[in-house]
Length: 252
Image 1 (cartoon, rainbow, N blue to C red):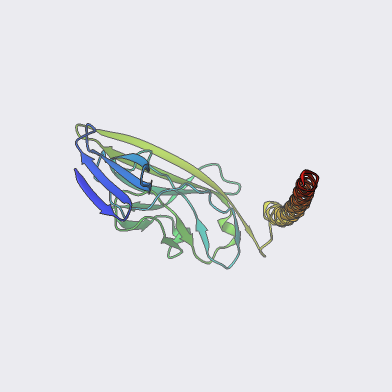
Image 2 (cartoon, rainbow, N blue to C red; image 1 turned 135 degrees about the vertical axis):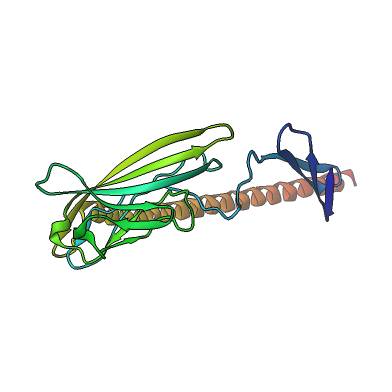
């Protein structure tokens, strides 16, 4: 057990209280000579995990590109358990408008990108996971987008999960419906979001104003009541003193 004392705070760590790779961290804070707060937290590590590893969140790709500009095709597939070692390869497929079949256009394996379709030669850059075979982000950049790039893109993950005694193969496929326009336009969702943001701000300001008025009136009413109570108490004391003086004079 490790104990650290600092002012009125006692922190002690017990190792071995909990089965497995767990420790119990307890904090005891002395609020008063006879009053203290005792808090314990159990911390478990089931596998060595790097403290610098970032979290993974699956975000849908944008679907509208502007002709002549660059565009990011997003594709993210997170592992369900981050502590499991894995390796993955990624393949991108494209189906243009009017076509029925997908064409294999790009692959990424062992940190080596390969552009397969001649239509995308020198026009695709990898912007996904780097310096690792455990791919979770398979995003790519399309350079100098043209109207012919409109269509459906499919991102395909082939992942191998490595456990202690066996390996498990899994696949994930995601679609991106891309539309190429001549000029950027704001979507309905963007406009609605901005309007809702301003409505929320105005609503919060009105709510704060109402709360301020309510609190002011409550404080003012409490002050008036206190003044009336003080005045009544003063009059009662004065009346009692007068009665006492009258009794003394009668006794004389």
